[in-house]
Image 1 (cartoon, rainbow, N blue to C red):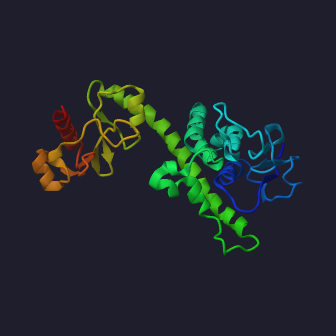
Image 2 (image 1 turned 45 degrees about the vertical axis):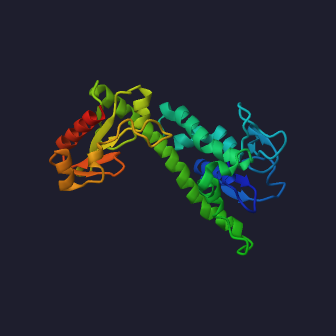
Image 3 (image 1 turned 90 degrees about the horizontal axis):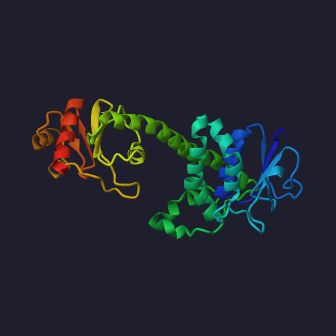
Length: 305
């Protein structure tokens, strides 16, 4: 069936139908996006996908609302918003449209659902209190997207539609960046795993470039790894490995005597010719050459022992 219309509600908008529109307009670029409350238009029909309006969820009829009772729930009883429903049924096709390798589709689909889609679903349904974000509550994605709505005293006849159209590429950028990042991590995992095998028992992991590495280190159980080195433009970087994704605490810090030093002062403190910089937080250092950064890494291992 050819999709000719993507139908959602008119008026003010929320993150769920805005993000749903990102998915659907990528898959059906020739379809007309219609924002309306007209009952005839929001009823299922040939060539239409209806979402966040219509008081029904029927994938066969291509209507994806979540405001009715009973509302659609995930297997774990958490509620869907229209975004979750659209992602459930069209997410794999969207990932294919973004050229995600077929072998990675399920992994990235699941990860994006749990880390990106589900929080949108929960907040839209009032199942998550924004206060859980603490001081960052005003900077969550749903809140930021809703700041793109017209202010109360700037409302012409088409103000909401114009704001929705302007917000769509912003929402698209967030979705695409998240998915591209997840796809890149999958590519990096293979490279990091190979580098871990090459390093053997060494606590120093050398990579061919800067890339996400912690997840691969954890996945293969490389608990002996303490530091990572890689080229960084004309220089070489030495970084620590965080204990987990929930903390900034490292498995081992760089030597305290290096903290905050640069150039000659760092060369003197470390005894390494070519040492250029060490962050005051002792989680990254920079050297001019591979030989220099590897020497710094070896000294850091000794200091951590």
